[in-house]
Image (cartoon, rainbow, N blue to C red):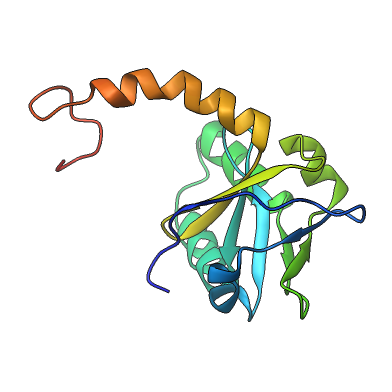
Length: 147
C-alpha cells in the first residue's frame, strides 16, 4: 500500500481491541506502533515507518524544550503490537483514555499513518475545520506548499 486513505468506522470491543479496516491489514501485518497523536487522536504507524520517524527525531537537536517535549511524549506513549488473525490490535488503557475511545471509533488514512479518533471527537473536529477548508482556494493563503 502506497499510502493510507479513507475513513472507516470500526468499534472497540470490551477488551479494548480495535478491528483494523480490512484494506489496511496487509500493510500492518508485520507490526505497528500506536502512539499519541495531535488534536486528541492516536497515530498508528507501520513499524518500519515509526522507526524511520524516530530516527529522524534522533537527528534533531534536543536543545529546545519544544523538541524535547514532543519527542518524549511521542516515544513514551508508543505501544508496539502485531495484529491478531482477525486483524485486531489492543489499544492500551492510557492511550484509550487520552483519545477518549470507548466504543465507536473513526479510523482515517492520513498518508504514512492511520489516525484513530473517538467518533464524536472526529465529528467535532470536522465541524471546526470544514468552514476554513471550504474557503481555501487557489491564489489565496497557501496552506499546503505547492497547492
